[in-house]
Length: 111
Length: 115
Image (cartoon, rainbow over all chains, first blue to last red; front, side, top):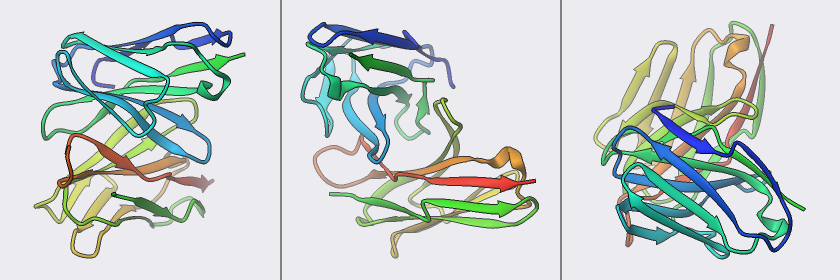
C-alpha cells in the first residue's frame, strides 16, 4: 500500500453533479496516476502526473480533469457525473524506476 | 500501441500444485514489467518488478521471468495454497512513444486454489 490513501472509499452521487476524488501519498513519489477498473475492460488510465502541476491525459480522459498542486496530493474531478462513470477508481504512485503502488480504491456510483 | 494479453483468463488448481501464469506484450521496447495480485474488493498489490535488463525475479514461492525478444513473461507459483487465490495482473512500462511514464495492463488471470 506504500502510504497511499484514497478518499472517499465509497460515494453515491446523482447524474450531473460534480465529484472530486482525492489521492494522498506519503512516499514523496514523483509520478501519480488515476485508473478506473470495469468488468471486461480491466484497468484503464484516466490521467497521470509526472510532477507538481505537470499532468497529461490517459486513454479515457474525457469527462475527467485532474490537479496536482502538491507532491503528495492528486485530485480527480468529474465535472458533471454520468452513469457511464460508475466504476472503481484507483490511484497509484511511483518513483522513476520503482514499482507502482496502488491505493485501495474508491467505489463511485452515479445514479 | 502496446497491448498486453494474459492467458488463461481463469485457472483452477488443487492445493499444492505448481502453476504458471502467462503474460504477453506486443512491443518489446519495454522499460520494465510488473506483476500484481488483486483480492476481491481491494487494490492491487505489487508482487515482482522486472527491469528490462533482467531475466527473472524471485520472491518466496514466486518467480517471474522476462523474455523481451519474444514479448513474454511468466509468473511461476510453487506449491500453491488457497491463500494464493486472487486475480493476477501484469503491467508493462513501454520505452517507446511520446511518454514512457505509462503502464499498460493486461486484464488478469483469476486464480482459484482449491483445498
